[in-house]
Every structure is written in C-alpha cells, then in structure tokens.
Amino acid sequence: MTKHPGPSDARGPSAADRGFVAAPSSARITSEDGRVIWDSGAYDFLENPDCPDTVHPGLWRQSRLCARQGLYEVTEGVYQVRNLDLSNMTLIEGTDGVIVVDPLISAETAAAALSLYRVHRGERPVTALIYTHSHTDHFGGAGGVLPDGAGDVPVFAPQGFTEHLVSENVYAGTAMARRAAYMYGVLLDESPTGQVGCGLGMAVSNGTVTLIRPTRDVTRTGQEETVDGVRFVFQLTPDTEAPSEMNFLLPDRRALCMAENATHTMHNVLTLRGAEVRDSRRWARYLDEALNLFAPEADVAFASHHWPTWGTDAIAEFLGAQRDMYAYLHDQTLRLTNKGLTGTEIAEHVRLPPSLEANWSLRGYYGSVSHNVKAIYQRYMGWYDGNPAHLWEHPPVDLARRYVADYGGPAAMTARALEYAAQGDLRFAATLLNHAVFAEPDAVEAREALAGVYEQLAHGAENATWRNIYLTGALELRGHPAPLTVRSRMALTLTVDQILDVLAIRIDGPRAWDEHLVLDLHVTDERQTWRLTLSNGALTHRSAPPDQPPPGAAHAILTLTKPQLLALADGAQQGITSQGDPGVLPRLLGLLDAPDHHFAIVTP
Image 1 (cartoon, rainbow, N blue to C red):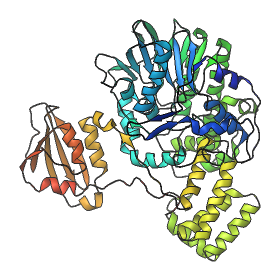
Image 2 (image 1 turned 90 degrees about the vertical axis):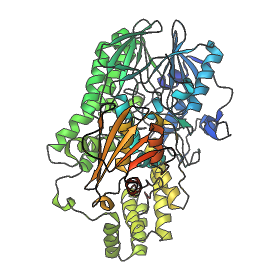
Image 3 (image 1 turned 135 degrees about the vertical axis):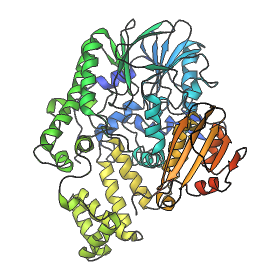
Image 4 (image 1 turned 45 degrees about the vertical axis):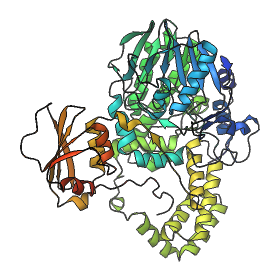
C-alpha cells in the first residue's frame, strides 16, 4: 500500500467543529465497579497535526476529525453527542421532552451522553427512542437512556429490526465478536504505533449492551409520524448498510438523517467482522431516492457517525457522490465478472474514478475498494471462482505443510519470505510466512517475521480496520492473550423461538446423529408450548396455540419460564419441573457444544 497524503480539502475540519457546545467534564467513563468503559483521553496524541511515519496521512487526518468530542448543535432543536462511543447519539427536542436517536453501544456511555445534553439543555425527559438500524452501536445503550424500560415511551425501528438484530448479533455472535476484536483493535494500545481509530469513529465502548424492543415499526417510505410534536418522514432502506435500516427527514427543521447509509468514508459492502453481504446496487438506488425525495427539503444532513453536511447544494453533492461510488463498484465488478475475472482479480483492477477518489468522504478509512469488490463478487457468485483447482483445496494447515515441505522447511520458507519483504512485496511475504506459521505454529522465527510484516502493512494502511487487523495479528503472534468479555443483557429480550434457534446452533451434530428426542416446553410466562424434536442431528421446534399441546406424545414435558429457558443453555435447571422420562433433558444438554470465544485466527 502506497502512502500518500490524498486529496486536499479544508471543509472537513470546519464541519467537524461547527456547532460545538461543550465537552464532557471527563474524557473517561467508568462502570459502578470502576472498570473503564470509555476513555477518549487515550487519543490525546492525535492533537499533534504532524503525521508520524507509522500512520497513513489520510487515516491520521480522519482520526483527528473523529476525535472531536462533545455536544454539538446540528440545527435548531437538533443536537448530537459525538465521540462518547463509536457512533453518535442524536437528540431531537420536542414539545415535552427529547427524542433520542441511536443510543450508542453501552448503557454507560449512553447515560453519559444524555447527561451531557441535559447539563446544557435542561432536564428534558426522553419522550421517544428511535433506532435507525440493527447494528449494536445504534441500540445497545438503550438501557442507559431509559433505565426503567420503555413504559409508555414509543420505540421506533425499521421493519425487520429485531429479526435481523438477532441474526447478525446472536446466531454467529461468538465468531463475529472474536473477529470484531481484530477489526476494531480492542486489544491494541492507543498510540501512533497502535490503534488510532476505526475510520468510522474512535473505538467500541466496553460497557453493558442492552436492548429495549421496538414498539412501533416503520414499514414504508413516506410514512409520517408526529412524535412529541416533531414531524418525521421516513425512508426504508433495507439491505443497504444493514439488512434493516431507515433514513428520515425532519421537514419542519429541514434536517435529514442518513443513518449510516452516507457517512464521511467509503463504507463496507461486507464488514470484516462478518455479516450478510450488503446490496450495493440497492444502496446506490436508495441514496438516489434520498437525494431526490429529501435533499431539496434539507439544509443539513447528519448521520449516526461523523459530522454533518450543511447547505442544500452540498448535501446534493455529498449524496450524489456516495450514490455514484456504490453504483460504480457494483457495476464494474459485474462487468469484469462477466468477462471471466474472479473477485480477487477484479479487486486488483478496479479503482474509483479520479473525481471520486479525490473526495475525502469516499476514502477507504472503513471500507475499501479491495474488500468491497470481493464482497460484491461474493454476493453474486459465492465462494467458488469457477476454477476446478479451487473446488476441493486442502484446508489451511494441510496446505501450509505441503508448501513448507516444498520450500525446504520452515527456516527456508521464512528466509525466502524475508527476501520478498526486503524487496517491498509485503503481501507475498505475508502469504509465505502464514504458511510457515500454520505448518509449524511453534516456529518462533517465522512468527516474529510474520508479526513484523503485519506491522509494516498496518503502517501503510489508510483503512483503519485493515490497520487494526494487521496489528492485532502481530500482537497475537507474539503471544499476547486475547481476552474478550462481552457484557450483554440482550438475551433477555430474545423470543422463545430465537432462544431455541440458539440452542439448535449449539447441538454437536455428529454426536447427535443417533439420538431421537421429543421434548415439550410449557413456557408459563408466554402461556404457550413449544415442541422440540431432535432427529438426524438437527434440533427443530414449533409452537402450539396457547393451552393446546402439540399432537402426539413427547418423551418429556418441562414447565419453566423464559428466563429459566435461557439459563438452561448453561446447564441450570433450578425451578424447572419435569414429567416423563427424566433422562431426556440431561441427554439433550449433553449434546450442546460450547462456543469458543478465543479461537485461533493467525495460528492454526
């Protein structure tokens, strides 16, 4: 990756500072037990305008802008708290109180953001909560904003919000959380040689993730709602930056919220932590729809990350450029796919037009042309590139051992890799050294050499998530542990069907091949019965109407509450009553496989 200063634009700094009201009294937020949840003071080194050699100049500039912290006025009656978490909290003043939009990741940071607002705008009650989309940094702090629950406070979200929230954050949650630790650099020190931000914001907070379930769905574009005296006009944008997402216009305040569909960076078509591949074609079309529906009616456009764009013409320019970027990536990827190129090959060919490449808001600080092109290819063509040699390749360890043997052993491969690194081919050096490490995980020289190559790749990366991934890989290669503690109260909001889906995912299929179990769960607080069937290694379930048991006999019947069902996954059976075969439940629980929160990534 070539380091270069990139385009020149003075609008970013002035826009990031505009509307500043006040900074928080402390840059550090702690939990009741003293644990640090958020510490923006760790990034004080970014006050230096001179970019060090260990950071790409474009990323240094972006991180300095994201590090601005405090309460900001967007327009009359609309405020944002920035840099108290990865995302922004937006506060819209109504007749009787304040409407909170996207309450950050953690209850602790959300409470601090709301407190900062109230210090300067008065003790207004929260009269509504709005989630723009189904990612954790836009709902996880709900419990800090409404600590006693929603009560009569309406909670708005786009259609499909809860379903997609669970699909993205729970079903594959362990694997995503492990990879997110790489992507966001949570194990790295904040420094010019370590984590300097995430491109989208500074970091992810380390507090308690909560969820207050939506009570009001937005189901169509053009839907109007008056909330605490404030008029909203919504635009549904499914399968864009999130599977469930929406923008909205405040027509009486000429303010447009673009959620996370248009921020001051190229975004991800497929986030590196893992998720469903997003639809860049629809993304571009929804941006065009927003441009035509809402931009002429807006004097300011703001989002759930970064800083606003002011002026009707500037908003049109901003949205038009974002639209063209996603459309260009989509169409050029498909054009080259239809000429027979694979995703990896296309990623080497595609670059943005100079007019887009020179736009600061389209730079690859968070997404990148390279991995977005591969994601678009994946969406249409899948993992297989059509070459029969790639249809049934050996897995990484077996492949690595063969490569290493052909190179004459780990030492010989390491030496050859270092020659490539010395010639500037860090990419192939990383490939060879990765084989060396996977073939001989205890080869100290190969591990250290690969860590060094990853550091060099990181220092040249304009993309913050690439930098964090490389540096975290280097850290783990050098033997540092990978602690990951997720404090979440989201499980309490899952439906019974979703809890049973999670149990099904944990069944060790091969060990369950020869088991056949039928178990009825009478969940008293739901007043409903679910039948679980384990057959051929698969645990399936269906519900019966209230007070009507499923047809046919079950091997056992459990009577329990939903919280007891949640605890059952961890083996807790207190308070559960059972009828029928007493051995059924232990047999089922014995087939559950525990997820590994610390699985290896840079080693086998």
